[in-house]
Every structure is written in C-alpha cells, then in structure tokens.
Length: 225
Image (cartoon, rainbow, N blue to C red; front, side, top):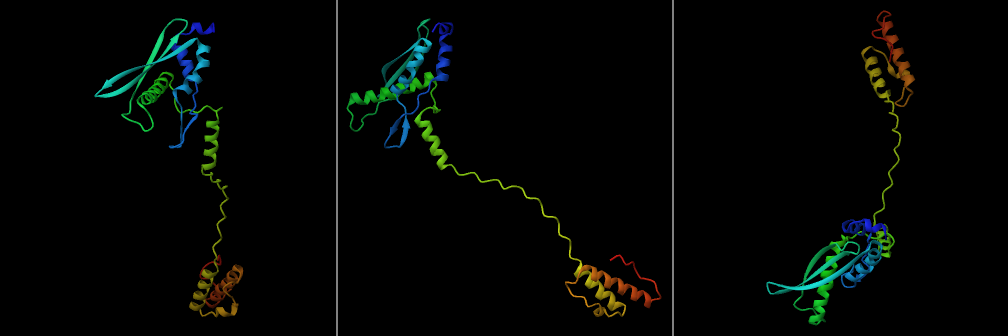
C-alpha cells in the first residue's frame, strides 16, 4: 500500500485498466448471448480499489431532451492518498413503456444500463476474456469443436525421371523407307514393332552396308543410328 502512494491517480487507473477483468457471466436466455452488468463490474473492481488505494462512486442524474427522459450515470474514481478524481459519464434513454415493468423499474433498469457503460468507459473494459474463467474456457472449447480441421500439407514427392523416348517406330519407318529406296527387302530382318531397339539399329546398319556394297562399297551416311 505504501508503494501506491508514489503513484498518481492516473497511474493507478492505468494499472487497474490493464489488470481488471470483468467477464460476461450473465446469459440472456432469449437472445442466447452473454453479458455483464454494473454489479458484476463493481464486484470485480473491489480488490483493485484496496490494492491501489482508490474508491469508486457512481451517481445518477435525470435530464430531459426533446421530451424524452435520459438517465445520466456518473462514475468517479477517487484517490485516497491525494483526493484527486477522474470522472466519466454515460447516458441511457428511458423506454416509454416496457412489458412487465412499472415506471420505477424502467428507471432502475435504465440506470443500471447507463452505469455499466460509464464503468466501461472509466476502466476501458472490452470483450477480452479472462483465461481463468469458465466463459473463456467454454468458448475456446466450442471454437475448437466447430473450427474446420486443417488439411494436412502433402509431402513433396520427387519428380519422376523423364522417360526415354521410344525410338523403335521412328527407326522402323526410316528403315522401311531406306530399304524401299535402295531395293533392299527389309522383311528378311524379321523385325516386329516391339523388337529391341538394338535389333532395329543392327538391321539399319546392315541395310546401310548392303546399300553401300551395291553402290561400290561406300556408305551413303554414317552408321550412328
């Protein structure tokens, strides 16, 4: 407590704003959503008031604008060491009527609404969930159940080596053409479409040799088939 006397009210407020958690622990059964009220905020605030030597006071004022009644909630934090104050206000308009409520209840509900937003403004409350609350844990579990499962990234596969071009149809066509042009019977080589490439090359070489002999012993082109 002695250490807090060295802090200004703004420094104390800054620490409270960074530490205070007021989870939305109430459930609206009709809307299906969770919310917090002014009482819940004040309950969460009390330990920090004692820790930092401050006190919070909330008052209401009524004002009329354009024939409509507004409740103005004024939240003030007091420094017990220096008597400094910081004030934030918020307004909420009374409903003209609300089913099941008399006029006093309408004013009370409007006051509670305005007070909540005055406290929200003073202590910078947001929708950050306290990791120690059931609300945070339940929401985290629900998100985990409904979140789409991440697709496994396929492992990269090594590219297949390029397949060697089947040279047999080309060699066979060249062999038939060459034999026809040089009066050689290619059928004597007994080649088939699926014969080994080596057999095609051997037959091609023999045909080149035969054609060279018919022309006087010189090959018309090399044997590098």
